[in-house]
Amino acid sequence: MPKTASKPKKDKRSKKAAKQKRTAKTSDRHELYQLSVQAPEVDAPFFKKYFKKLTGRPGRHFREDFCGTALLSCHWVKMHRENSAVAVDLDGPTLRWGQEHNVAKLLDDEQQERIRLYEADVMDAQCPQVDMIAALNFSYSFFMTRDSLRAYMKKCLDNLVDDGVLFFDAWGGSETQEELEEDREVEDFTYVWEQHRFDPITYQSQCRIHFRFKDGTELKNAFKYTWRQWTLPELQELMTEAGFHDVHVLWEGTDPETGEGNEKYTRKKRGEADPGWIAYVIGRKNA
Image (tube, rainbow, N blue to C red; front, top):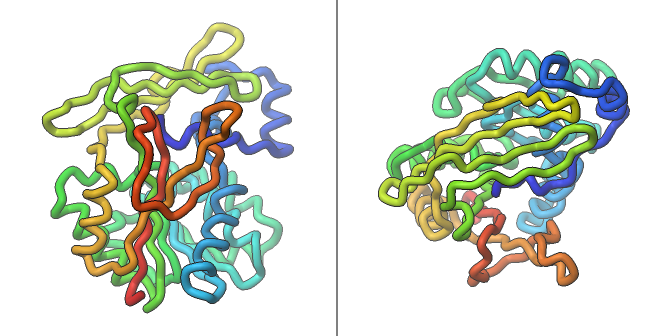
């Protein structure tokens, strides 16, 4: 399953909403997604630390492609007074939700001025160059051909400064090619990940997210995706063809007690035949 094993974000807003006893009618799908899928309090420090490890300098300017509600970008600007973020997404209503519920609730006007939301196709967005670009939650999987994904990677290369870094997360394993449902309790609701269909000829997956509530109601098909499952060799080859250097994989370790991922990533040339794994694919510009 995708990066939904991340610990849900817990803050005053989520606790308040939980006390209101969520139902399908009263819940907001974007808030539910942020609580059950995203972990910006983990991701943002990881990008900060790994960028400095690769380049030897602090990264300040961050771009979040396919940003959705720009939650990660908001966490990025909060980490340091010199940090700035560019958040790009094609869906206007989702961006406006993020502006109201995430950007507008940053500490002050100064923090809000250091984040810019762009309603645009990632292939067309006219944004300043940045230190790093992240395309997370497998969002780049909307590109269905090698040519289209390579073209996107080349756009990323152009939008990075000379020692910039591109971060992709990736998922795979035998379970990702099965048609199944997995659920997980999050506060007072249940997150449901459905792998609705997988085509072994095209490697296209149809995936869905549902939310179920304690009163028996369900927010069905809250999110639907049609993706191509890209393999780690393909992603590394395409990054190299696009012009990136030092292309490599960070592989997630395993907790010996639970057998689950431990959210600790190390550089590896070989992985394990895990039925469901998470990894990062990383490339540098002019490394």
